[in-house]
Length: 56
Image (cartoon, rainbow, N blue to C red):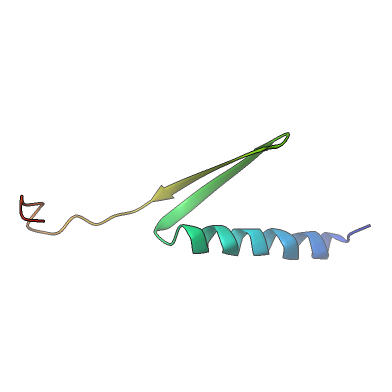
């Protein structure tokens, strides 16, 4: 049986992998429901100070 320390190490690996997949995310929610896994990142984006133009 895994110890709590081993479980935490495994969870930290999952966290690191999730943030590698979504580098702009400041929060990632992972929901496991049976054989389905849902990943919902909340990402931050900056809008240029001049706003968006038609040329970009």
